Image (cartoon, rainbow, N blue to C red; front, side, top):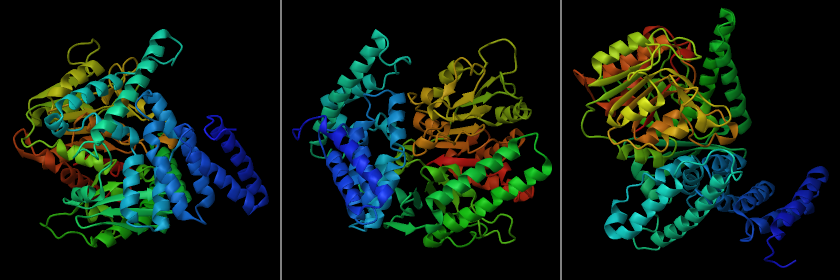
Length: 594
């Protein structure tokens, strides 16, 4: 068979699979070596489609990881760099998600083997792979929001063409059905042709002086500058090893974390989820709920020992800041599995020694990637917000009533600047009814957007997670519907709803597909979200305390202090009500962004 025969790579992969299976049954090392060699041929073949090359690279790396970690790392680095071809813009959003679900944890494995190989600058190389391969769809969306001032100035024709092609390829997907209708066929064909033209244009732009890294992950020296306001801690959990990659204003280092073994993390995540289920089940008896809270507390203590404390010790944050002093800030990038646990709440909250908690040492923020943090910071406004949008759903079609929402809305109406209030307090639709269309119409004018409502995290397709507005059965305000929106006055979004910072789709955990990230993409540099279901009375109290701390004068707010305001509001809630043993009530709230 000719070397350039397109049929060759699939046949080689099939043969490699047979040999790998035989080696697994018999322990035959020669079979394993031959399987790895065949997989490598496929991975490096330009005739193979990108998805097959990625799968072959993963298979070869799995076989060679112990004996030749450097070779395995190189294979997975190549695989990560093939992701833009395997899940590129010519595909619909649904198809891109499907492709990425086939390669779950690919970037984490690549980073882990890069650290194991211990070549030159392993921490910086590993971090670059995570920036490229995790939150991949989020990164594609950021491409459409890139500041093109430099390109417009130096090469205006190329900049205009680039914007035109992006707008064409980011147009809404055709209705489900793929190629079962002429319209869908033409959309798919157009996506392919526009995608090819866009790829060629990117190559042309990157050939120009000063634009070599256009829309590529930042180099290490560029990443380091983002730690000037405080350390950025990027966790990497893999079947091979687990580490924290730590950015400070001086260097990128890595800290091995053997306590965060892959299987151990999965077990703790499952137990945490099960315990939350017991707590939120209203039919559960009090004794079982208390036991479930104790389970949450034990997991937070394990999270402290395995992850948070080693990192804070490494950074020198070893005690509670003195009264009146400035608190240090840390930005957490938890990645996939660890993103299901509240790093900001790790610690021994039931202990008399309160210094052994993250909440009592640093102010925490989250970001999907360092690039996303840079984007959020580029959106920070210099003046206080002048208008606000309040969206309140005390009653929801098909949902339970939220008894404290009306009081929360009344309080915010008196505090926020020039508020527009959309509230479901009438049986008849009117201009104040919180519908998807009404919210999208009012968001462009809002510096602050506050939502008090139900929300749902979709277990299989996280892009369909939504805020439950009055018309959520017909026109849900989903993650996918927020992605195209670009807001210019946005400063702060407070999503006082359940699970708005949660992605439950196991094979897409590396993707930042949840409502909190969607609001940040839309333009809000600060977003308050939640990791699980919350009590509406607790949510109202947190909102009250948060805005009180954020307010600098009547109807004037310093949104840049959002992380500090939430931190102290949660800390005060935990302590003033003696809720240390009940983390489900206070630990769900997160700050994402600048």
